[in-house]
Length: 468
Image 1: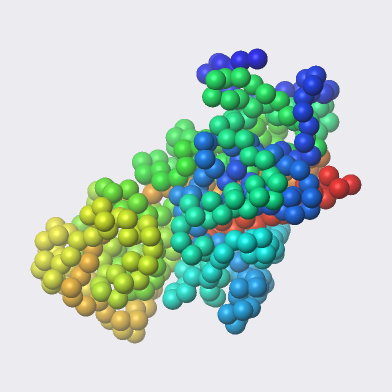
Image 2 (image 1 turned 30 degrees about the vertical axis):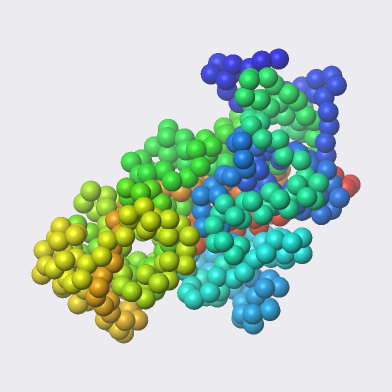
């Protein structure tokens, strides 16, 4: 049959069984981003067949647009490097960043699950290393795991290659339009559309929603994230809120819809992410008046709203030679510099002319940056900045949302009364994360913690269900 997308949005179909001659597979996963691919790797490691339905022509999702850093504790890599860390300490850091708002059952499940995922990735041939040289805000140990390329695209390529080599099947350009359930809320299967509008069906024992958040749905952003109404959306356009729409149609519970990852360092006009390592190692953000306006070490997510509140919704990342050397180890920044993002000023008057502010104001701002000094925002500096100065113009951006379907510790989707659906699971962008209900709850790496840790847990739950 053909499907008119404009006339018939994603919908729930109640039936006793799937259409005749529908092929069946034990596990179907909606979305082949980092979450879906991790779940598939877990399932195939247990010898269970699975099918990933991916809307894009190449699996990418939010992960491909990120730096690709996965936080995890007690991994083989950490032990090999002698890094003093624990899953307990990691869970404490996640909880502390949200001031206790993060769902405790998910914090525990994900900080345990991500370790199993990382160690399995390595065992299956994915080359990983731990980011060295600095700590992201809120982390007390070096625990960011990355591919040598240090890009989300490289991570995605490695995950897809590993999942398919293990036997997982991926169908691209396949948009799920129908969820089929019986009267007891047991998932029977899905209907998915090809680019020509043709609908095909597949039955399954377990369905995992690993599809998306809602950052690309302007109406939902306006309603649920008012601080981001006019912000640049730097995430994946496929984040259209489908999982939440299905959940509402099923009377499923949602949670933490006010949580999201912003970023206060979106390079403009080039349109690229600038690593927050620049801030952690001595850089500052200065507005058009020549003033600093926040503690840059609190985190890049909440920095987005700080930048957006400045004149023109703009700021300048200002740093010096040692920080520039560090920035150039990040591929995203290197590409932005090639595109003309970096400006150089030999002295304070030249920097003031670049920013468009008074020399006197800028000089007072820079004089406030000194080794051992704690400023009015609560930031303590390790050293002052030295000429020549470097500057990159940035704005605040929305990357991805952190709220979604409410789930239990095994990633079962929950009904409004708190009871679980029998065989419907969710994780990653489709489900609530561990960042609480506001922008400041996002700890660096929480997106991939939820995607990889959640994908691992969902895959294990699906495997256990099918093996019964």
